[in-house]
Amino acid sequence: MALKLTDTLVDGLALPDRGNKITYDTEVKGFGCRVTMAGARSFILNYRTRSGRERRYTIGSRPDWKTITAREEAKELKRRIDRGEDPMAAVEADRNAKTVEDLCDRYIEEHLPRKRASSAADDRAMIAHYIKQDDPKAPKIEPKLRHLKVAEISFSDIDSLHRAITRRGNPYRANRVLSLLSKMFALAKRWQWRTDNPCEGIERNNEEKRHRYLSPTELTNLIAALATHKDEQACNIIRLLLLTGARRGEVRSARWEQFDLTAGVWTKPGSTTKQKTLHRVPLSAPARQLLSDLRAKAEHEAKTQNAAVSDYVFPGRGSKGYRQELKKDWRELCIAARLVDVSTVTDAKGRQRTVMTPNARVHDLRHTYASMLVSSGMSLPIIGALLGHSQPGTTARYSHLMDDPLRQATERVGAIVMPARESAEVVSIKGSA
Image: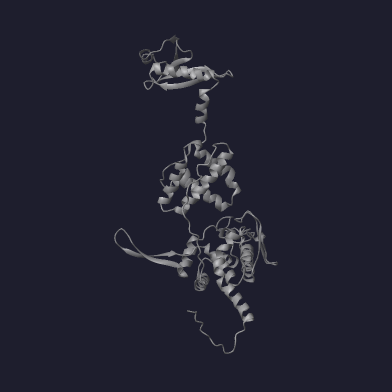
C-alpha cells in the first residue's frame, strides 16, 4: 500500500494485529512508515546497495520526526547510496564496535597467560576493581569505562580515572592501572580496534624509590623473633629470603627439582623470575643446611603418612599448591622484632588506642641481603648477578652503601704509600693570608 505520507496520515495509521506493517510513500521510493502492534511509529528507508544487497534503515520515530523532515532525510540517504555508500554499514559497525569490556576479556584470555602468575593475578584485580568494576567490592569510581567503545575512549577518560584513583589515596596504584591500560590499548592498536593509544602523555604520579634495609640491630631482633614464632614454615621462608636475597614469589613457589644441594646451586626457571630468564645462583652453607633439613623433614612426614613428598619446598596447607600468604605472620614478626611505627588513634567515641604498623616489608629482606653484600666489599656486578638483575641501573640503587668498603680500600692504599709512624706529630696547616 502506497500513499503520500503526512503527519496526520501517519498518526492515523491502523495498528496491525501482530508484528508490524509498513506503509510506503508515493513521493520517495523506499520511504515509508512502520507501525507496530504496540503503537510505535517510525520512518524507514528500504534500499539496495551497489552489490545488490537489500537493506532497511531506520530514520527516526514519531513524533520526534515530522514526516516532511524524514522525507528529506530519506532523499539525502538515497543520494549517498547512489554514490556507493551504505548507511546501514556505519550503524552495524557502531553496534558491533568493541567495548572496553571486550578489550579486558581478550587481554585476559590472550595476554595474561604469558605473564607470571602473581603479575596476572594483579592485573585481574586491577581490571575488576578499576576498569570493568564488576567486583562487588570494587570502589565507586568515575568514569566507568566498562561499556564505552574502545574507539571512543579519550585522553580525558583515562586521565580522569587516573586522578580519581589518586584522590582515593592510591597514587602508586593509579600508576599501575595507567600502565595496564596503556598496554591494553597498545594491543588494541595491534588488533586494529583503534589507531592510537589514549594513555600517551598522561602524567604519572611521582614515586619515591624505597631504600629500606634492616640495621644490624633490627636484623638481630628479627632472627630472635623467628626462633620463637609459632609458624615454622613461615619462619623458614623468611630465613631462605634472608640467605638468598630471592624474591618472595620465587621462594614460596620453589620446587625441590630446582635445587642441587650437592653442588649448592639453585636454578630458577624463567617462568618464576621477574626477568623471565633462567637464573642460577650459588647457595651458602647455611642455606644448603636449611634446605637439607627441610627435605629430611618432608621425607619423614611423607613416610609417616604413607604419602609422596610434595613437589614444593613450602607446600600449601590443605592443597597441592604452594604457600600463598605471609601477611599475618610477617606482621606478628615485625611486632616481636620491634620493626613497627607506633601511633595513637582516636575512634568516633573519643577513645584512644595504640596502633603498631610494620615499617618493613618482606621485600625489604632482599634489600637487606644486598646491603650485607655491599658491606662485605662485593662489587655491584656481583650483587646484580646474585639478585638476578637484568639491568645494571637496578643494582645501582645500592651504590650509596659502598662508602665503607671503598673507605677501607683507599685506607689500604694510603697505608702502603705513607706508612704510619710510631709517633706521628700532627701539624696544623694554616692557609696563607
